[in-house]
Image 1 (cartoon, rainbow, N blue to C red):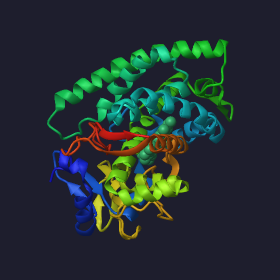
Image 2: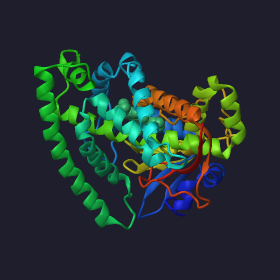
Image 3: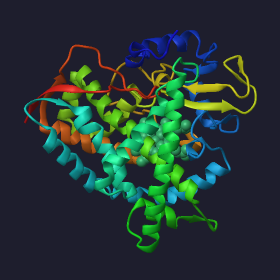
Length: 389
Ligand code: HEM
């Protein structure tokens, strides 16, 4: 079984349904040699039980997402000081402005690639501004981001080893560039502090400890990678869900106060990240099988979020669903730090799009091409036929 074909990545859900009922904990044979976990209960356990399942996985080793306690706890506490609900909420006006500028430029009669013109640039500009990168450097920032994302275009066990080696070499080069750029920015903030995330990161202190330069660099990279592709897909996937479920779109247009719960339902129904990775520290029994210490485990949140044991009519897109305890933002000590920001971005984006577009539909009958990063679910492009209000 190949989980990474385009068909599968467009619509993995029937296979997920099957796997949950037949083999919720599945050992993928060599060359992959890893485990996939499909049901809600076990996915939640794997993601949550950090005593047993380490976050150390084959990935960049300076991103605190991949650290375990106590290093993770220290960094998370420091970063949370800079990443407060208040500082996130204060971005709303700016996000509205960016959104409306992008739509002003993008909306021409009849056709638009929403991904290229809107859902990709919006989160990019938000993160760049939040970090404090001037608009003149946004293309540079975009290149870094693309290079880092290429690390997820293939997996261990896939044939394209040369590609993976190239991606890693490019990542190292970009890390050096970013390091130099960041050193310069930090120097500026030290002499001339301003109201941005970087200044707050430099100043943050917990128990007399501050972030080290390398820790700020790792966080900076993690934000760039974590804050963009995910939110882009939340917006695009919302549009896909609305087009597939016109009754739900009509309901939302009639009852706009349902927008926050509609966004939660998109997160559940088409989770932007389909899986999270963990490594058991010791042999662990799951669903009657033993996963040996050190094996890679993929906790498939995209499948957990369709588990009928947890969600009634799980394959139905229902914007009124309450409660909706989906795992799209993870769970436990690593739960997404950017959840409030991405929810706000999606809210602003969808309000803006729905207000301006009277009607939208896919411009092509061809199945959409999935995005390249393998753990991400969503379309690479979103050409729409539109009718502007
Ligand atoms: C729809 C959008 C998003 C989704 C679906 C998402 C999903 C996730 C998930 C599932 C995790 C947990 C990973 C794990 O346990 O292995 C996570 C962690 C994280 N996310 Fe997000 N994310 C989104 C947006 C953002 C944004 C906008 C930011 C930053 C501005 C961000 C920053 C982070 C960070 C820093 C972590 C690491 C937290 C830790 O390890 O303690 N995310 N995200």
